[in-house]
Image (cartoon, rainbow, N blue to C red; front, side, top):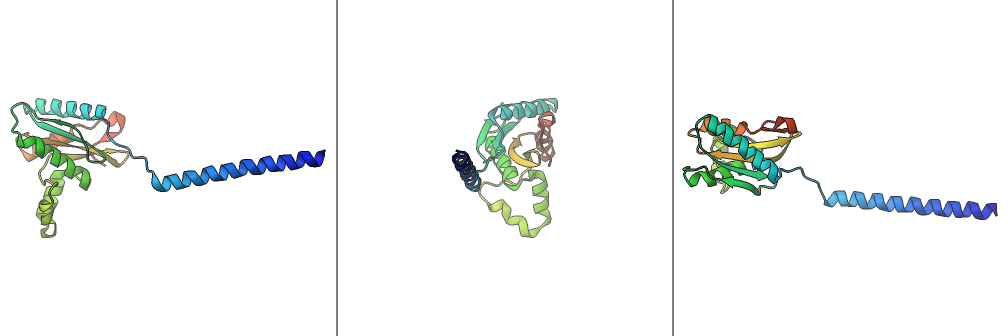
Length: 175
């Protein structure tokens, strides 16, 4: 009887160990094919746009705003009242440029102006080397971006875009 109990205990232990190993193998294989990505939400896009609008208003400016998620998908696109229609597309492209390069577009523009080797960046269809595009970071990782146009100057667009940080939630406009 003791032998039978011992054999049953060993068999059940081996079965549980086998299941655990298979589960671990499946998890490891899944990690090789699936990755979780932090990204902005629609709710965050509305909050960022609200903060940009408040900053622009405090400067007596009306702007167009684009907010993109981590994949470059447009979450929000708003044309400020009486802002030229070209500014709306410029905002989206500024946001895309900041997202894809992980660099504020004013900084990128100034770096390109310093080097002949990077002048061709301006020939890429979606990149726009104008100020006003800022990546949005969460824990040092780019999770989206914002683009601002129509603020009246390169510095204004950049300043408005940088003002959207939500530090209390860990969303920043600098790494």
